[in-house]
Figure 1: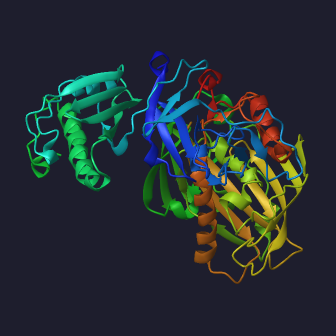
Figure 2 (figure 1 turned 45 degrees about the horizontal axis):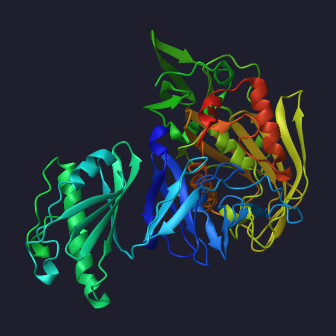
Figure 3 (figure 1 turned 180 degrees about the horizontal axis):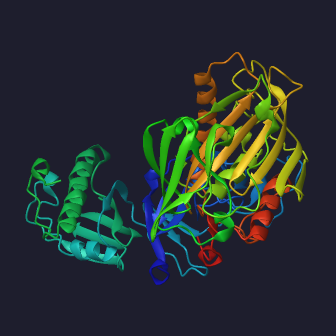
Amino acid sequence: MDESTLGWYPIALSTAVPPGTTRAVLLAGREVMIWRDNDGAAHVWQDRCPHRGMRLSLGFVRGNSLNCLYHGWEYGAASSCVRIPAHPDLEVPSTIHATAFAMLEASGLIWVSLDATPEAPPELDLHAVPLISVAVETSAQSLANGIFDIRLDSFAAPIGDTDTDTEIEALRAGRLFAVSAGAETLLLALHPVHAGKTMLHALLHAPDVADAELAARRRHYAAIARHLRWSVENGRPVAPLAASPTEARL
Amino acid sequence: MTRTSDSASLNQWYVIGSLADYPAGTTRSTRLLGADLDVKSLGKGNITITERGPVGPRPLPVDLRYDHVWTTLGTPARDIFDMPEWHEADRRPVPCGAIRVRASGLRVVENFLDLAHFPYVHTDVLGTESRPEVARYAVEHRVDVDEIWATKCEFFQPRAAISADAGQISQYIYRVVSPFNVMLYKTPPTAPDRWDLIALFVQPVEPDVSIAHPFMMLIDDLSTTTDLVAFQQMIFIQDRIVLENQRPLLLPLQPGSETPTRGDLSSVLYRRWLKQKGIAFGVEAPAHLADA
């Protein structure tokens, strides 16, 4: 799967990894992990401790260090091993470190590049509210095709405007789409898990909407994301959703 | 799945269960090194084992030593290991059941040899974070019996055994009797001048699937069998969380893929010994290590 892992991939909504937690992620068949230290910085590493191969995603965060579950080896935010509990007086050689990948956190998404020499990261500065991550049992390509079929006649339903044209733009080929109708934009980030499964991470860019109204938007657009999943998994056209969110097919 | 072609693994004795796992009048199936076996128990210690071979059923040798069912698919160079404690009158044999693990049997053995994980995997029982140090110990390959022995091992344990009501510094001796069979001797809380024995007989089913058969021989006439078994099973289930989450699932034998430290000396010798023997079953093939 070498060619398919080139470039930058969105692998999680920022809200999926609260401070002090870890998260295992499968990206194009490769096991990586995300952890967020208690200063709030997220890190994306290979999900494997160099000691005896234990998955670091089962480890625990203390302060700004990640500790492996097996023998408690402590890794600082820069990925170097700083402490080996079994040998408290040992100055850990700098050659012992976890494998860190280039990462970016922007617009509510965590991105990673597995490449040895990563290309320039995506430039994202939209203020986006994370909505939902949905697992779609299909290839990223099929899902991307499905996105271009979205017609969101009721996109701005909460405002009552049911005749808005839908604009679909690929912000990052195959990986990030902006589906807009009026002033609201649904951001859809595609993350290939393996050949038959793709995570769809959905966010909302709605600068004119007050925080108090976001809850209703969340439900509405989450339903759209689920509807997209259903359509693509079942090879059905992505039909317009009904005007009312409660009639939306989940 | 067909039986492996790895002769080094085939020419060993393996446990496929305790006697209690094969009650009289039953026929049970199991798998060893990829080969399917039928085990028929006729009662009174009469057990036959047949391999479902490619050209028909093939009878296999049977040995019922230590109240376990042993067999081999090849011709082992050595007999089943010696365990003189078996004959002690106050020894309490405690078979602990069969636990399936999605991991190479070699990883299971290596985890059994490891001390440094006690505070993290068996927290507040076999170890505690405030006392994590693994002191230097001695390891050797005893050529006359072809076994790996680690001696003078010590570790502080808040609750060394179910009969322990206080912490103790446990003395440990480890003994790898064959590539997939390992045992340890440790200080019993109630009899500091004797040894408790805990063995792990590993049945390699497929390269990444094993069945562990823990077996204890204890100096303990206070605890119930249920409690003893539950304690040992708890320890093993905690280890299984690690075993099933090591990558790769198979044991890498080439240098550089993993990072041993001074406390890992027994595993370093164990891996070297496996390499000398040419064990391939459960070993990660070099090409697969290119990238995780």
